[in-house]
Image (tube, rainbow, N blue to C red; front, top):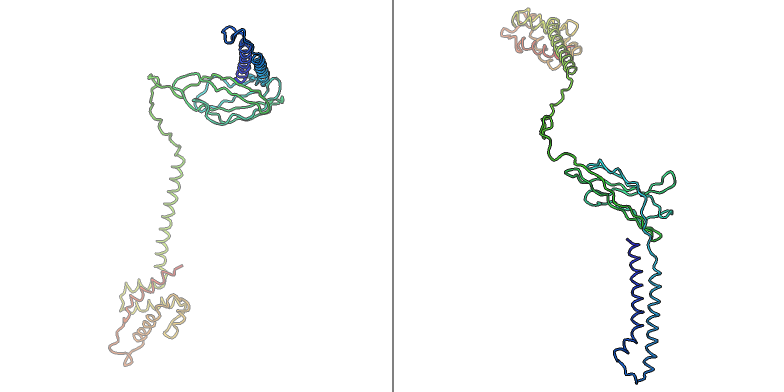
Length: 347
């Protein structure tokens, strides 16, 4: 386009120069034919003045014409282009166009690379870069992406590219390139057999759970056995404690014989002696609390029990009050409290 415009300007200036020369040359003849001046009149000054004017106009025209032809024309050259594949594109596909940066056998340095922008209805220019090939030639690589999808198979044109030189008037052009693009899906599906427009959903795939179920059963059985074993251990421990712990045996004897029976009092004495590890009296009770300090909160009740036991067993005759009442702290209540403390500290 630049070369055509320069040639048109040159022709226009040539026509103007030729027209100006023709007008000035025919001016005296026209004046004589029209009778603009009498033949007898002599006007040397006018004739003399007209000739310099004619010469000046011709000189101006002659000066303008070379100046017009002196304008340097731009060189328009078709580029060597490696075009992308012309078929088989759908929405989102990318394609690359390669342009050899040479003009008339010389390296071509573009003034600017094509910017990354939308290039028409169908394409977006993603990037432009210059790559150096193994043979030393420089290629401009332009990446395009298809950004629209047609409703049917059709042909569109990759936009043309015009590159201006950075140092001269050379212009490098790459023509449009037709390619075919197709829709992502047809507008209407074939309503035959399994080609219906809508198809039923696929059933969710079944995960292999047999191994998981087996593991769940094994761990559930192990947990159940653990619970049963713990309950059995707890029951056996309780039965053994009931049979072997001192205050458990004493409480069982008190329940069997009654609080006022001497056997019940003796059973509690034996439980206290076994806990202390020696025979106890009222004066030796500190040995009990030293051996089993967890019974310390019941010191007063135990001392009361020993005082009443001394009156019961050793306070005969006048030394024993006639209205003495055993059970100021009931025997069964005291033994029950001591059994609870004993159970809390079982090993």
